[in-house]
Length: 66
Image (tube, rainbow, N blue to C red):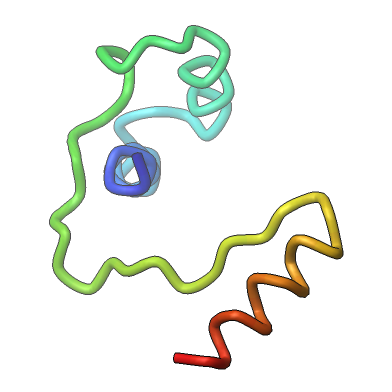
């Protein structure tokens, strides 16, 4: 999903679409309207945050064990 978002943002940056088009794509909930997948090189998951502070704290403490 991140690669699709990045690919779509790259298309916007290249002038293929207006920035508002991203909101339209998300509202349609249809992959075919989005841009191409970005190359996976250099992309990695850095952090995941939840709306629950206790869950976030639990995850951070658990990750410290590794």
